[in-house]
Image (cartoon, rainbow, N blue to C red):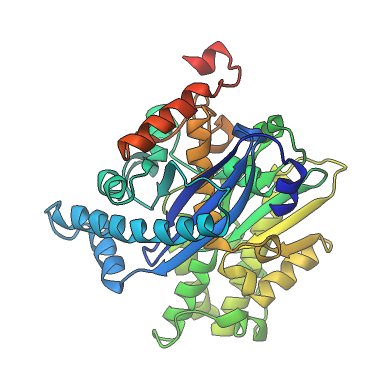
Length: 424
């Protein structure tokens, strides 16, 4: 990010803030970005960040709401208010410190925020979502204009509400000469193809999809087979001691999940119930122990990733670099299998690009807010299934001064030329 910002010193300097709440409601990350340029031709540099763990009670409250315990909306409103107070504090930490270090950096006018939210699915397809952002409280506490509810417009126009990050990921991570793939080895394995090129038009070729099971399956399997004594396999240390069962691997790869055409995405990630029950049943029937089953499932994750890469990534002469993020980047066996199966493709952890997973999530939200105020659609048909690109986000005014300044900024920004179909 820093190299690109230095290569494009011209244009207005702006700043924008972003806040991301982790999917398990355990962490909140906030970042402040310095922005040169506009829209998809902008260059971003992270100049401030802050991360905080959330009280365990908040995560428990969220799980209870998701699982449908209790009929009162009070807990949901209370959780949203609690998150807003913490978010306001993190904005002060991340943006305040950045502006203090560089007096040429303007304080942000807008903050984007995104969290897991509550989803309603029909026939396993996302249909509606309620966010956990108390935008009015956050605007009142910070004075900033708040941009939230990014999935809502996508859902309203026929999309599935996600993934909403791919265009932002391209803007933050793309390389001028190399195609890149962001491989998220989190609870679900997810892949985003980031085509080479610095022109904003390259973002039109971004593609993203859920690949298959991820660390959640390994964690659930470890917990079940150890009677809850161990919640995960640290670094794949148990799996690497086992042997892959090729018959079980073939059976897991025959799952109906892999027959569905992609790109695929679901707010809850890839369902693991079938994979878990089939693995446990196979182990009991054939006498496979913990280590062998973990080893086989790790191979499943690796094979699914490789198959997905071959299926969705365009075959181009440009070299491809794989950027790894998520808990799986610390799983030695998984990394070994990926390296072996991908013929030593260049693989780097995202930390080599100067950030980690939580910071990337927050930076993507900041970019989503930036694209909204610059009138740039953030979703495409081949990412969310939306019928036509749409500008996402709901804007809540901050202080009068910041609101008027933002309106002037937006009025001065000329939207990119759109087709009539996109403009309707």
